[in-house]
Image (cartoon, rainbow, N blue to C red):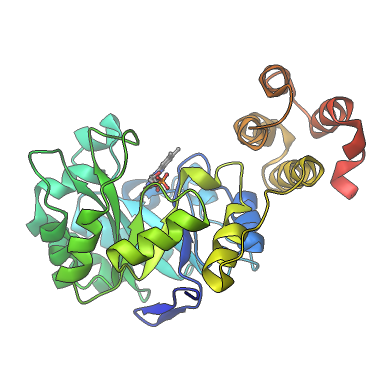
Length: 331
Ligand SMILES: Cc1cc2nc3c(=O)[nH]c(=O)nc-3n(C[C@H](O)[C@H](O)[C@H](O)COP(=O)(O)O)c2cc1C
Protein backbone atom coordinates (compact mmCIF):
# COMPACT_ATOMS: atom_id res chain seq x y z
CA UNK A 1 0.00 0.00 0.00
CA UNK A 2 2.95 2.35 0.67
CA UNK A 3 3.36 5.04 3.26
CA UNK A 4 0.73 7.79 3.17
CA UNK A 5 2.39 10.98 1.96
CA UNK A 6 0.83 14.38 1.33
CA UNK A 7 1.34 18.06 2.14
CA UNK A 8 -0.07 20.06 5.01
CA UNK A 9 0.20 23.60 3.65
CA UNK A 10 3.91 24.07 2.88
CA UNK A 11 4.98 21.10 5.02
CA UNK A 12 5.63 17.87 3.13
CA UNK A 13 4.63 14.80 5.11
CA UNK A 14 6.58 11.80 3.79
CA UNK A 15 5.25 9.40 6.40
CA UNK A 16 1.67 10.23 7.34
CA UNK A 17 1.73 8.20 10.55
CA UNK A 18 1.10 10.69 13.35
CA UNK A 19 1.72 10.23 17.06
CA UNK A 20 -1.37 11.71 18.74
CA UNK A 21 -1.07 14.64 21.12
CA UNK A 22 -1.52 13.24 24.63
CA UNK A 23 -1.32 15.49 27.67
CA UNK A 24 0.86 13.88 30.34
CA UNK A 25 2.18 11.30 27.87
CA UNK A 26 3.83 12.83 24.82
CA UNK A 27 6.89 14.25 26.56
CA UNK A 28 10.03 14.94 24.54
CA UNK A 29 11.87 11.64 25.25
CA UNK A 30 8.72 9.69 24.36
CA UNK A 31 8.49 11.60 21.08
CA UNK A 32 12.16 10.87 20.30
CA UNK A 33 11.46 7.15 20.79
CA UNK A 34 8.36 7.38 18.58
CA UNK A 35 10.38 9.14 15.87
CA UNK A 36 13.13 6.53 16.04
CA UNK A 37 10.48 3.85 15.70
CA UNK A 38 9.06 5.45 12.57
CA UNK A 39 6.40 8.04 13.44
CA UNK A 40 6.37 10.68 10.70
CA UNK A 41 4.86 13.45 12.79
CA UNK A 42 5.09 13.90 16.55
CA UNK A 43 2.88 16.07 18.73
CA UNK A 44 3.81 17.98 21.85
CA UNK A 45 1.53 18.01 24.88
CA UNK A 46 -1.27 20.57 24.49
CA UNK A 47 -0.76 24.02 25.99
CA UNK A 48 -3.19 26.77 26.91
CA UNK A 49 -3.07 29.83 24.65
CA UNK A 50 -3.88 32.00 27.66
CA UNK A 51 -1.01 30.51 29.69
CA UNK A 52 1.36 31.26 26.79
CA UNK A 53 0.15 34.89 26.84
CA UNK A 54 0.90 35.01 30.58
CA UNK A 55 4.40 33.62 29.85
CA UNK A 56 3.65 30.78 32.28
CA UNK A 57 6.98 29.03 32.88
CA UNK A 58 5.53 25.52 33.24
CA UNK A 59 3.63 25.92 29.97
CA UNK A 60 6.65 27.26 28.10
CA UNK A 61 8.70 24.31 29.44
CA UNK A 62 6.41 21.93 27.55
CA UNK A 63 7.29 23.60 24.26
CA UNK A 64 10.61 21.94 23.56
CA UNK A 65 11.58 19.90 20.55
CA UNK A 66 14.51 17.68 19.66
CA UNK A 67 16.48 17.88 16.39
CA UNK A 68 15.63 14.19 15.91
CA UNK A 69 11.93 15.04 15.54
CA UNK A 70 11.25 15.22 11.83
CA UNK A 71 8.00 17.10 11.79
CA UNK A 72 6.53 18.26 15.05
CA UNK A 73 3.24 19.88 15.86
CA UNK A 74 2.39 22.22 18.68
CA UNK A 75 -1.18 22.08 19.98
CA UNK A 76 -2.93 25.05 21.54
CA UNK A 77 -6.27 25.12 23.27
CA UNK A 78 -8.35 28.21 23.82
CA UNK A 79 -11.60 29.78 22.72
CA UNK A 80 -10.74 33.44 22.12
CA UNK A 81 -9.43 34.18 18.62
CA UNK A 82 -7.45 37.22 19.78
CA UNK A 83 -5.76 35.28 22.63
CA UNK A 84 -4.81 32.50 20.24
CA UNK A 85 -3.37 35.05 17.81
CA UNK A 86 -1.44 36.74 20.64
CA UNK A 87 -0.06 33.38 21.83
CA UNK A 88 1.09 32.59 18.30
CA UNK A 89 2.94 35.88 18.00
CA UNK A 90 4.82 34.98 21.21
CA UNK A 91 5.50 31.46 19.90
CA UNK A 92 6.65 32.48 16.42
CA UNK A 93 10.42 32.19 17.22
CA UNK A 94 9.98 28.65 18.64
CA UNK A 95 10.64 25.56 16.56
CA UNK A 96 7.50 23.74 15.48
CA UNK A 97 6.33 22.77 12.01
CA UNK A 98 2.55 22.60 12.35
CA UNK A 99 0.17 24.50 14.62
CA UNK A 100 -2.71 22.33 15.79
CA UNK A 101 -5.84 23.67 17.49
CA UNK A 102 -7.52 21.43 20.04
CA UNK A 103 -11.27 21.28 19.40
CA UNK A 104 -11.82 17.76 20.71
CA UNK A 105 -10.76 17.66 24.36
CA UNK A 106 -13.61 16.14 26.43
CA UNK A 107 -12.22 16.99 29.89
CA UNK A 108 -14.81 18.79 32.04
CA UNK A 109 -12.54 21.64 33.17
CA UNK A 110 -11.73 22.49 29.54
CA UNK A 111 -15.27 22.06 28.19
CA UNK A 112 -16.76 24.15 31.03
CA UNK A 113 -14.50 26.95 29.85
CA UNK A 114 -15.93 26.74 26.33
CA UNK A 115 -12.71 25.16 25.02
CA UNK A 116 -11.75 21.81 23.45
CA UNK A 117 -14.79 19.88 22.22
CA UNK A 118 -17.14 22.67 23.46
CA UNK A 119 -16.09 24.60 20.35
CA UNK A 120 -17.93 22.05 18.22
CA UNK A 121 -21.17 23.66 19.43
CA UNK A 122 -20.22 26.80 17.52
CA UNK A 123 -18.85 26.19 14.00
CA UNK A 124 -18.84 29.96 13.26
CA UNK A 125 -16.45 30.44 16.20
CA UNK A 126 -14.29 27.58 14.87
CA UNK A 127 -13.94 29.46 11.60
CA UNK A 128 -12.99 32.69 13.40
CA UNK A 129 -10.45 30.98 15.64
CA UNK A 130 -8.80 29.20 12.70
CA UNK A 131 -8.70 32.43 10.68
CA UNK A 132 -7.11 34.29 13.61
CA UNK A 133 -4.52 31.53 14.06
CA UNK A 134 -3.74 31.31 10.35
CA UNK A 135 -3.23 35.07 10.24
CA UNK A 136 -0.86 35.02 13.22
CA UNK A 137 1.53 32.15 12.43
CA UNK A 138 3.77 31.28 9.51
CA UNK A 139 3.01 27.56 10.09
CA UNK A 140 0.12 25.65 8.57
CA UNK A 141 -2.82 25.38 10.97
CA UNK A 142 -4.59 22.08 11.61
CA UNK A 143 -7.63 21.34 13.76
CA UNK A 144 -8.31 18.25 15.85
CA UNK A 145 -12.01 17.43 16.08
CA UNK A 146 -14.24 14.69 17.44
CA UNK A 147 -17.28 13.12 15.81
CA UNK A 148 -19.49 15.66 17.57
CA UNK A 149 -20.22 17.27 20.91
CA UNK A 150 -22.65 14.43 21.72
CA UNK A 151 -24.77 11.83 19.90
CA UNK A 152 -27.52 14.44 19.33
CA UNK A 153 -25.02 16.77 17.70
CA UNK A 154 -22.87 14.78 15.32
CA UNK A 155 -21.55 17.66 13.26
CA UNK A 156 -17.91 16.96 12.53
CA UNK A 157 -18.41 17.59 8.81
CA UNK A 158 -19.89 21.04 9.48
CA UNK A 159 -17.08 21.86 11.94
CA UNK A 160 -14.41 20.60 9.55
CA UNK A 161 -15.87 22.71 6.73
CA UNK A 162 -15.80 25.73 9.06
CA UNK A 163 -12.14 25.01 9.84
CA UNK A 164 -11.40 24.72 6.12
CA UNK A 165 -13.13 28.05 5.42
CA UNK A 166 -11.08 29.63 8.19
CA UNK A 167 -7.87 28.54 6.46
CA UNK A 168 -7.03 25.18 8.06
CA UNK A 169 -4.49 23.18 6.07
CA UNK A 170 -5.70 19.81 7.42
CA UNK A 171 -8.04 18.39 10.03
CA UNK A 172 -7.80 15.34 12.23
CA UNK A 173 -11.00 13.52 13.18
CA UNK A 174 -11.32 11.25 16.22
CA UNK A 175 -14.42 9.14 15.64
CA UNK A 176 -15.95 9.49 19.10
CA UNK A 177 -18.27 12.05 20.68
CA UNK A 178 -17.33 13.98 23.84
CA UNK A 179 -19.36 11.84 26.30
CA UNK A 180 -17.70 8.73 24.88
CA UNK A 181 -14.33 10.10 26.00
CA UNK A 182 -12.18 7.14 24.92
CA UNK A 183 -14.70 4.32 25.48
CA UNK A 184 -16.62 2.19 23.00
CA UNK A 185 -15.33 1.83 19.52
CA UNK A 186 -14.56 4.74 17.25
CA UNK A 187 -16.95 5.40 14.38
CA UNK A 188 -14.87 5.69 11.25
CA UNK A 189 -17.83 6.52 8.98
CA UNK A 190 -17.74 10.14 10.17
CA UNK A 191 -14.08 10.25 9.12
CA UNK A 192 -15.05 9.01 5.66
CA UNK A 193 -17.82 11.63 5.48
CA UNK A 194 -15.33 14.36 6.37
CA UNK A 195 -12.83 13.13 3.77
CA UNK A 196 -15.57 13.30 1.13
CA UNK A 197 -16.70 16.81 2.11
CA UNK A 198 -13.32 18.55 2.36
CA UNK A 199 -10.60 19.57 -0.07
CA UNK A 200 -7.82 19.58 2.53
CA UNK A 201 -6.22 16.40 3.93
CA UNK A 202 -8.02 14.56 6.72
CA UNK A 203 -6.15 12.50 9.30
CA UNK A 204 -8.09 9.56 10.72
CA UNK A 205 -7.88 8.79 14.43
CA UNK A 206 -9.41 6.32 16.84
CA UNK A 207 -8.63 2.67 17.61
CA UNK A 208 -5.60 2.16 15.41
CA UNK A 209 -3.79 -0.53 17.37
CA UNK A 210 -1.57 -2.31 14.82
CA UNK A 211 -0.60 -2.53 11.17
CA UNK A 212 -3.86 -4.17 10.14
CA UNK A 213 -6.09 -1.53 11.72
CA UNK A 214 -3.92 1.18 10.16
CA UNK A 215 -4.48 -0.32 6.72
CA UNK A 216 -8.22 -0.61 7.42
CA UNK A 217 -8.47 3.02 8.52
CA UNK A 218 -6.80 4.19 5.29
CA UNK A 219 -8.88 1.89 3.08
CA UNK A 220 -12.26 2.38 4.74
CA UNK A 221 -12.13 6.15 5.14
CA UNK A 222 -9.84 7.33 2.34
CA UNK A 223 -8.05 9.52 4.89
CA UNK A 224 -4.70 11.05 3.91
CA UNK A 225 -2.89 10.13 7.12
CA UNK A 226 -3.45 8.22 10.34
CA UNK A 227 -2.95 9.13 13.99
CA UNK A 228 -2.15 6.71 16.81
CA UNK A 229 -2.91 7.54 20.45
CA UNK A 230 -3.25 5.05 23.28
CA UNK A 231 -1.70 2.16 21.37
CA UNK A 232 1.69 3.91 21.40
CA UNK A 233 1.66 4.55 25.16
CA UNK A 234 4.48 2.38 26.48
CA UNK A 235 4.81 0.95 22.97
CA UNK A 236 6.58 3.34 20.59
CA UNK A 237 7.52 0.30 18.46
CA UNK A 238 3.96 0.26 17.15
CA UNK A 239 5.16 2.81 14.60
CA UNK A 240 7.74 0.30 13.29
CA UNK A 241 4.98 -2.30 13.02
CA UNK A 242 2.57 0.04 11.21
CA UNK A 243 5.29 1.30 8.88
CA UNK A 244 6.38 -2.21 7.93
CA UNK A 245 2.78 -3.23 7.24
CA UNK A 246 2.11 -0.16 5.09
CA UNK A 247 5.44 -0.30 3.25
CA UNK A 248 5.50 -3.96 2.35
CA UNK A 249 2.80 -5.87 4.21
CA UNK A 250 5.35 -7.19 6.69
CA UNK A 251 4.50 -8.14 10.27
CA UNK A 252 7.08 -7.06 12.82
CA UNK A 253 7.20 -8.77 16.24
CA UNK A 254 6.97 -6.81 19.49
CA UNK A 255 10.51 -6.17 20.79
CA UNK A 256 11.94 -8.62 23.33
CA UNK A 257 11.52 -7.88 27.04
CA UNK A 258 15.25 -7.13 27.12
CA UNK A 259 14.86 -4.50 24.41
CA UNK A 260 11.86 -3.01 26.18
CA UNK A 261 13.78 -2.68 29.43
CA UNK A 262 16.52 -0.92 27.53
CA UNK A 263 13.91 1.42 26.08
CA UNK A 264 12.45 2.14 29.54
CA UNK A 265 15.87 3.05 30.88
CA UNK A 266 16.67 5.25 27.90
CA UNK A 267 13.32 7.01 28.27
CA UNK A 268 13.94 7.50 32.01
CA UNK A 269 17.49 8.66 31.49
CA UNK A 270 16.46 11.23 28.84
CA UNK A 271 13.60 12.48 31.02
CA UNK A 272 15.97 12.89 33.99
CA UNK A 273 18.44 14.87 31.85
CA UNK A 274 15.61 17.08 30.66
CA UNK A 275 13.75 17.72 33.91
CA UNK A 276 15.99 16.54 36.71
CA UNK A 277 15.42 13.28 38.56
CA UNK A 278 13.06 14.79 41.14
CA UNK A 279 10.44 15.80 38.55
CA UNK A 280 11.19 13.09 36.01
CA UNK A 281 10.85 9.96 38.11
CA UNK A 282 7.22 10.45 39.27
CA UNK A 283 6.31 11.18 35.64
CA UNK A 284 8.22 8.12 34.50
CA UNK A 285 6.22 5.73 36.72
CA UNK A 286 3.15 5.73 34.49
CA UNK A 287 5.27 5.22 31.38
CA UNK A 288 6.94 2.24 33.06
CA UNK A 289 3.56 0.71 33.93
CA UNK A 290 2.55 0.94 30.28
CA UNK A 291 5.84 -0.48 29.04
CA UNK A 292 5.48 -3.42 31.40
CA UNK A 293 2.15 -4.61 29.96
CA UNK A 294 2.54 -8.28 29.11
CA UNK A 295 5.64 -8.78 31.28
CA UNK A 296 5.64 -11.67 33.76
CA UNK A 297 4.86 -10.36 37.26
CA UNK A 298 3.84 -6.96 35.87
CA UNK A 299 1.27 -6.25 38.62
CA UNK A 300 3.80 -6.53 41.47
CA UNK A 301 6.44 -4.73 39.47
CA UNK A 302 4.12 -1.80 38.85
CA UNK A 303 3.53 -1.48 42.60
CA UNK A 304 7.28 -1.54 43.20
CA UNK A 305 7.89 1.03 40.48
CA UNK A 306 5.64 3.44 42.39
CA UNK A 307 8.16 3.39 45.24
CA UNK A 308 11.09 4.26 43.02
CA UNK A 309 12.43 7.80 43.14
CA UNK A 310 15.79 7.67 41.35
CA UNK A 311 17.02 6.36 38.04
CA UNK A 312 19.49 4.10 39.84
CA UNK A 313 16.64 2.58 41.88
CA UNK A 314 14.62 1.99 38.72
CA UNK A 315 17.58 0.33 37.03
CA UNK A 316 18.23 -1.82 40.12
CA UNK A 317 14.57 -2.84 40.33
CA UNK A 318 14.37 -3.85 36.67
CA UNK A 319 17.73 -5.63 36.85
CA UNK A 320 16.62 -7.60 39.91
CA UNK A 321 13.37 -8.57 38.21
CA UNK A 322 14.99 -9.36 34.86
CA UNK A 323 18.63 -10.30 35.44
CA UNK A 324 19.08 -11.19 31.78
CA UNK A 325 18.65 -7.49 30.98
CA UNK A 326 21.34 -6.40 33.47
CA UNK A 327 23.02 -3.12 32.64
CA UNK A 328 20.08 -2.34 30.41
CA UNK A 329 20.75 1.36 30.00
CA UNK A 330 24.12 0.73 28.38
CA UNK A 331 23.27 -2.41 26.45
C1 LIG B 1 -4.00 10.33 28.22
C2 LIG B 1 -4.53 11.00 27.00
C3 LIG B 1 -4.28 12.34 26.78
C4 LIG B 1 -4.78 12.99 25.65
N1 LIG B 1 -4.48 14.30 25.46
C5 LIG B 1 -4.88 14.92 24.32
C6 LIG B 1 -4.51 16.26 24.04
O1 LIG B 1 -3.83 16.91 24.81
N2 LIG B 1 -4.95 16.80 22.87
C7 LIG B 1 -5.73 16.12 21.99
O2 LIG B 1 -6.11 16.66 20.95
N3 LIG B 1 -6.11 14.84 22.23
C8 LIG B 1 -5.69 14.23 23.35
N4 LIG B 1 -6.01 12.93 23.57
C9 LIG B 1 -6.76 12.20 22.55
C10 LIG B 1 -5.82 11.47 21.58
O3 LIG B 1 -5.03 12.39 20.86
C11 LIG B 1 -6.63 10.60 20.59
O4 LIG B 1 -7.49 11.45 19.86
C12 LIG B 1 -7.48 9.56 21.30
O5 LIG B 1 -6.72 8.87 22.28
C13 LIG B 1 -8.07 8.54 20.30
O6 LIG B 1 -7.07 7.87 19.61
P1 LIG B 1 -6.67 6.34 20.00
O7 LIG B 1 -7.91 5.51 19.87
O8 LIG B 1 -5.60 5.99 19.02
O9 LIG B 1 -6.18 6.38 21.42
C14 LIG B 1 -5.56 12.28 24.71
C15 LIG B 1 -5.82 10.93 24.93
C16 LIG B 1 -5.32 10.28 26.05
C17 LIG B 1 -5.62 8.81 26.25
